[in-house]
Structure formats: structure tokens, C-alpha cells
Image (cartoon, rainbow, N blue to C red; front, side, top):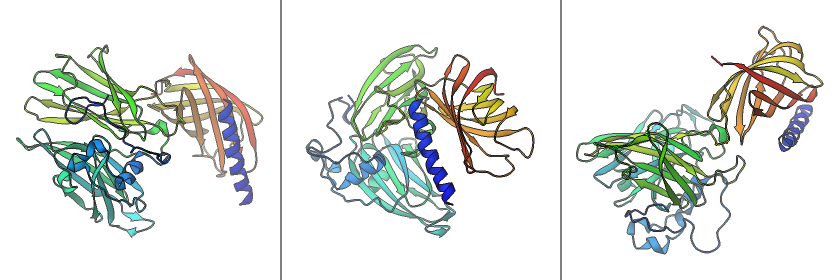
Length: 443
């Protein structure tokens, strides 16, 4: 036991050394400057656990003077988020412009370490306005397998006529969705919740990130597209929306200075580009580094609608970082070190900044034994600010030895090379190099 603990500590230290070496529109549409989400005066340091907890724990603070004239922003509520371990965001709810919003919750947990089998979920919902200020909250209980629908969620949470978003906490895993309904026709548009993913590896974010893609938008009669952007950050952010035509030429952009927790909504984002259609890229003007804390992220979505208001959501897609390169394919080459002198073949697949695949040992020497052929292990990895990390995992090694094996390097042209670290529970260790050449496609 002590040997494994010491080896684990040693690996953490080696890995650390190894990697070291290598203006938003206001609700009335005027576009007037908005005040910061934070109250005036000294403030505590931002909570690194994420914006979701930050915005909800501020429910006990008095509203800003600029909002006190609006009764729906004048709540002085206290909130304890400590009973909850799961978070969700519904990035757009409204009861304006001939619409209403219903909320749906599903308890998907079958067993819980704290609540046993088929637990009842305790759920806390907060309604947040476009300035990032809390309007109201409510708690709900959700039996196992239950679907709870809350009609007119804005009214249920004490809101007046407004547009905003929902933050949701639960003590077990649930799903959440919203139905934004056109009152005149009762046509619904379904919107799925996004998880905050505060401590998730940056390369594996889904549904939010520093760069977001709206795959299609239009301003072609009778259709128009809205743009909805939530600044999921404890800091104000400058956001740029870049509009492209259908052949990929940027035909316009818009600067969106957004306060912390602010929500931008434009019902017709291409009004000044009539007859055009194409993608929209929404990105932070300052792209954060991988290890930046707090790590600013955006949630973006669009509604494509006809002139009578009937439409459907087009969710945003988290884009790879600007420094990322498409590397999926077959890579072959050598591993060199004290324990390794091997020819290998690696098949790497890529989803945005997430890497995964297999590595096969073709010949040479290496500290693995295999109980079947091919001599293959699995890979997972990440793109980290233009560098590439891959971890080897034990799928077929016959003796079940615990080990860590990592590659970290850069790609130039069709060559992937860098440093390699290996360590196992028998205290075999190696720091070496690798060189791989891209020789074919993954499929």
C-alpha cells in the first residue's frame, strides 16, 4: 500500500515537471451600458467552483440601484446551495413577445450513495435576469422516474414580464429542458439544459466554451434567426459575434460587451444583412489559456423563426480552440528510452479538442506483456493550447500491473514528437522521447 502511494505521489511530481518543461443590449433594446454584476464596494475573490454557484449565492445581496426601480429585480433572498452536487443551466426563458416558457425535469437516478435506491431528487431552481441578477427561486421534489412539468416557470419563480435564464441544482442526477411556446399558435420550441462543467477538462466541454458555433442562421423572407448568448463567467467579457455567408466569407460582426452572468438576446441578428444565410461564430475577444482561472465560457443558441413567430431552437456547438489542428489519422514511428526501443502504430480519432484511439506495439522492446495479439493498448488525450497530450490505458495486459504512460508534444507538418513518461507499481520508470509520422487515415 505504501509503495503504491509513494509511486502515485512520485508520478504527480514527475508529471508536473514534465508538463512544465515542455456593449450588451439592455432589455428595452436601447443598447445602453450595463453596470457590473457585482455590487459596489469590496468583493470576495471569485469562487473558482464556477459562475453557477457564484450567481446563486448572491441572492442574499440587495439589487443595484439601477435595477431597484424594477420590482421583479428587488428580491432579497438567501440561498444555501450546499445540499446540491449537480448543476444545470437553461440559457433562455421568456414570457415576452407573445411567448411563454414551461420547464421540464426528469429524475434519471436509479441509485445514490447518499440516498439509496430510486431516490427522490431535491431540486433548486433560480431565475436570473439579463443583467445576471437573481429574481426568484423555488425548490421541488422529484420522485424516481418522475417527469415534472412546471408551466409558466417565470411566474412560478416570482418573475414579471421578462427574458432571462434558469440555474438549477439537484442532489442527484436529473435532466432539464424548457419549452418556449408561441402563445398565438401554441407551437413549442424545445431547449435542453447545459451542464456547467466547471471542473471538466477544457478539451471536453460540451454545449459551452470560449468559442461557439451557430451552424446556420438566416435573414431570408419569411425566415429570420435570433442570437442568444450567455456570458458564463464571474467576470465581464467582450464577446464578438462573427456572421458568415453560405460560402464562408465573413460579412459582418458585432461587439457584445457583456457583464458577468449577462444574457444578450437579438431576435433578428441578420437584420442588416438581408437575403444572407450562413454560420455565426461567437467568441471571447480574449481567448483564455487552458489553465486560466476563472475560465470564461459562453453558451450560445439561436431560434430560426418565420414571420408569424413559429420557430425552433438551433443549439450552439463548442468549437475547438484556435490553436488546435486536425490530427486524426494513422501515426507510425518509434518510442525511445531506457525501457522502450519500440516501433508502434497509433490510430488517433479526434472530437474537437478531445483525442482517443489505440496504440499497437509492432516490434522492439517495451515493459509490457500481452495475453493476446495484436499487442494493443488504448489512448485518450487532449489538445492543450497547441500541444498534444496522450495517456495510455491498460486493456489487454495480462498481469494487470498498474502503470502510467504519457506522451506530450507538438506537431509540425506531419511529424508528432515530444517527451514520454512511464512509471509502474514495480518502480520501473522511464523518461524518453517519441517521434511519429502521419501515414494514413483513421478509417
